[in-house]
Image (cartoon, rainbow, N blue to C red):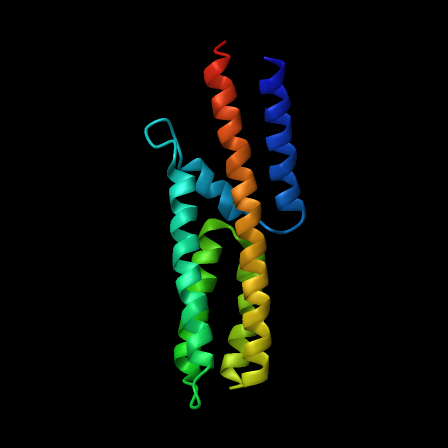
Length: 150
């Protein structure tokens, strides 16, 4: 029982720190509110799809920016997509990193785009790491509840 309470506090503290540090915003709370007993893996599934799609988009961005003749409209479309999906799950830092990226696309600024791509990659890796830790804590709590039914 004490272990469950400790894990609950650890999970709560960690989640609050993600909001305080700006990794997550209220959209993540909205996403969590859609999860219930009938679909207990909803958030993990949605975030996993986000990771797959975002990784694909980041790879496409790197390829598009590696061309001799860069199609800035195409790059901007990828960034817009990444910004939208980040926004929909509450991945605030990734979403915010997309704003200057879109500006660089509109200015057709290759150096700016490359710098922004690097920043987006870093924020993506960071938020992915944070989500993995969050989901690990949630899993530990579920397992603790299962082995200590009230």
